Length: 450
Image (cartoon, helix red, strand yellow):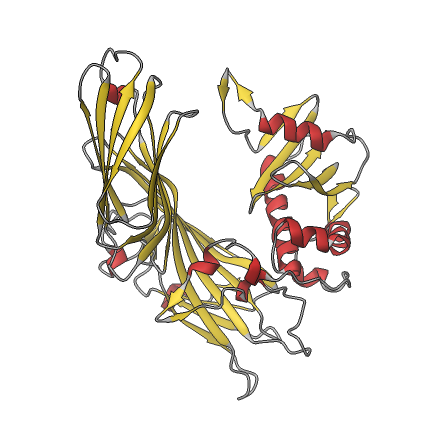
């Protein structure tokens, strides 16, 4: 059971607070934020772990779109259960509000408190189902105009041909209707993959992993049955067959393991790889999967460090996009730690490039290279001239690196997993909903050793 639940902004403002049991001090939110902001362990500044104990109080927290969702308890509570609960509470609130941010929470605080009272009673979880909560929650959401908000995630990045996908489509409340009382029939399926790749100093892949999710959000009335067809050559379990190059459509898709939402029926999955389900209201993961077999990474990284004197060195970074030219990666950030004695860095970007910036973060001794748009098949190079305050004794590469990347690639997934078709059991000829199937790849950990 949990004692308290609260939501903090990035500034530490207490947006939502609910005390269920009264056995934890009232100033716990301030204590938590101060501890997280100035977290130190073994003399090193690090991010606070998602679970920690302070003065007999267990703190659990997750960060969702810049907001801190926190639960406290004095009991011996399962950390995984608490973190999953926080994620589900954030998802339920987003289902009802449409947009999850500080403004929407402040405008809908009455609705949010009503939800919290139904989700948790005296510290015990009752339900986190959006569909079940509809029977008990009656406040209408105050809709925040998503058109004037910054993009909250991959949903705003997708393109289909020359027509942009509706950016506010998945930022609508599942309980609020369109003006005039109408409800537009839509269903969204996102195949989202987070990849972790580590390259050795010679450029070969040391480790590679994909954590994928098929996420669905339904605005269909009447809860019709859905059939989702995946790759026919999809297999589960390691068989020793390499799936390298499967992102280009060659070779089978091999999953190490996977799990499904409770609403999914697997009667025909072993026969033709189709999933049947009646989607509940709100956003939910249809399927989670993991791949650890080798796959073709979207980027290759080459880094060269050369000494240019006793107090100088030059770094040459080359990044090449290995995905098709019709695909573009967004908000690419390349970071590289530099020796602690680095005092100044001069950058040379390619002539004529647009949308690229390079900076030296002196407080963290880190090189940052931002590429706004990285077109598939292209290659970019950055040269950085380093100046040191003292002579480095030994190999520079021992104090520099590794190179890490973060990025988002819409309409691309390296695993090759595809939604072949999305079939909806129609109630009438007039029932013709919009179907949107989208793909996105993000870097969970993308590192190159030097």
